[in-house]
Length: 118
Image: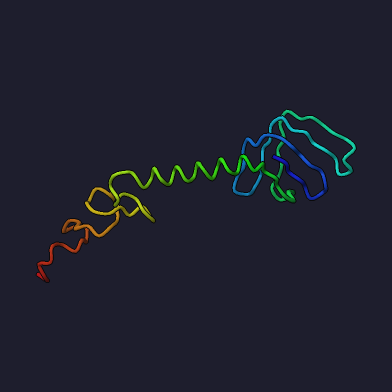
């Protein structure tokens, strides 16, 4: 992938890691200065996310990731137990999962079985 920095330098290498702050680690990197006349080959390079101007990722790689996401979605739909999981991981039926609207016990503050006020 190609990374252009705000100062005009570019780094071209294999993505190893990227975190939530867009800090990137590249391996087998070719770094170019802002004028484009000097080059360096680096074994590994760490780039702070706030210095990145833009990233260029090959279209082939983007297509492969999209296909993988579609396959993962299809596998998720075909699993048994449609009530297991979901947003908030509330689960569905049964008392084996935390949360939900299960009966609970008399000491757990559950709603009971509709016996009314006693």
